[in-house]
Amino acid sequence: MKVVMFTHSVVSCWNHGNAHFQRGILRALAARGHQAVALEPVGGWSRSNLAEAIGEDPAPGFARRFPDIDRIDYRGFEEIEAALDGAGLVLVHEWTDPALVRRLGRMRARGAPFVLLFHDTHHRAVSAPEEMAALDLDGYDGVLAFGAVLAETWRRHGWADQVHVWHEAADLTLFKPHPQIPRSRDLVWIGNWGDGERGAELDEFLVEPVRALGLSATVHGVRYPEPARVALARAGIDQPGWIANADVPETFARHRMTIHVPRRFYARELPGIPTIRMFEALASGIPLISAPWDDSEGLFRTGTDYLRVEDGPAMRRAMRAVLDDPAMARELARNGRETILARHGCEHRVDELFEILRQIAPDRPATHAPGVHPHATAAEAVSS
Image 1 (spheres, rainbow, N blue to C red):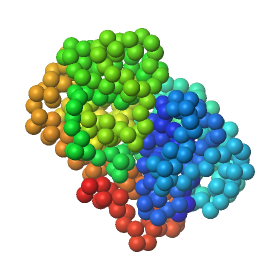
Image 2: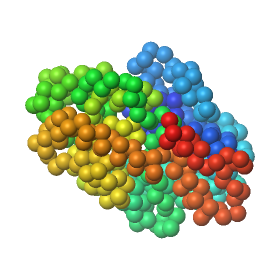
Image 3: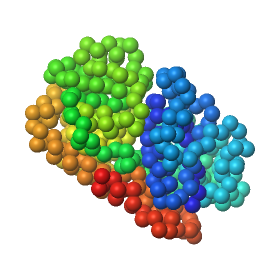
């Protein structure tokens, strides 16, 4: 099957965590023998900012690192129409230009042969409902929402049984332990500032515990305002800046633990939706401690796969416990990875996607290529 995915950018993950999951899905589809193509607009802000940050176009380096991802940069609709030729499934991410979202829906309504799904991976349906309400999704076959509470929001907007829960997941071909790398530092946190959506939380659960315990710590991310950078520096936290997502597993391996600090909307308004970094950290076999977050969908085993704390003092105690008890740290890492391998790899999400497709269009041809085992990639990851 030919699958076309509209992305803001698959080349750049600069302040653009959606690229992580999209890359993993494209790679999992290709591993099964499907033709998977990513379409991204020329001049997107994430890729432009990354090019400025590294001083060159990131596309050549991306192609060397991900030779199995097929992509097209588009300027106009003629390029898009050519790419859609022969497509059986089209996924349209919510950062796609609203005019293009509408035009694709019109194509489908006029009889285009592909199944057309809108993919929502943001809190705007709750935090800025007027923006999402302005999207014209007439003609779409359904909505993929990355959490049950977000799916329910779409159902209240009239989508009923056309909404499907489709969580993010880790690319298990990338995110795995690296036991050969010494854990030479105490803590790493990888995340962007978040436009002030978790400033107080980062101070309580990251900056102050690191300062109080005197830990060796590293923060990777972008768009930190000057007061935040000063606070990190005063706590003795290294700030190397942006990191390519493909380099994250080895960075996790150099540290003894990491933390999960959800943005305020996810902690309060959208429970059950973790950041993708939580999937990736657990897949990498690093002990994880989470700030308050309600795993309302039972994605993980709280207290077994990771530790959950309620406030800053509890975070300090949990950090100290992980550092002082290597056996407990190893058990947390082992348990977390076990859950990811069982349920939360991109191969699992491809299974779920094709099940959704079978519900929408039961007459579609088989959804895995002849001779390709549906879990080949995941099986390889488990054995590695």
